[in-house]
Length: 188
Image (tube, rainbow, N blue to C red):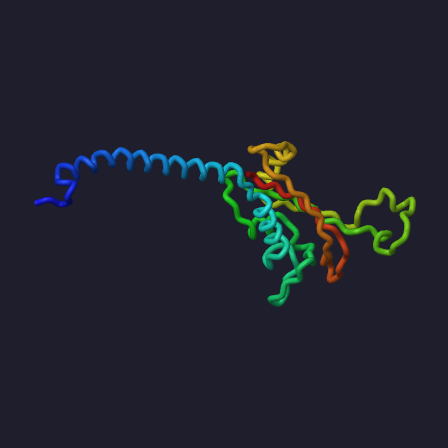
């Protein structure tokens, strides 16, 4: 009994034997190409800017963080002076301490009176410190480790992002205009 006019059982087995090495070679080529493409995307696709934006939004707008949150209502752009500390930032932005993690330094400063009133600077005000000046860290251990590497460029250096945000500081039931400077380090 013949399977095909041109192929009998022996011819069919012989034909499969010729195609088997070709199929194995094709599978190896596909696996190698997939590995190269995956490696290229991982090495050259930098997502640190998007990650920095996510961390920044989480820091500035989370109700359990540093903003004023009262009666189930968040006040974006209003920093609660009493909640502006390392422990609040570490609670909302949990990270693994064993791997290189993103870190940030936040500096809160009130604006001087002469800027708010629109007048020129007097001699006494020239060397006066801001009324409110406070610093908080998110992941302070990693910030101190990554900060020296943040000045370099390259594949191993962390990305250094600096933001300045105009905010209101809520202290003693008063709103004081101020600035929040954020230095965010995101490892690649």
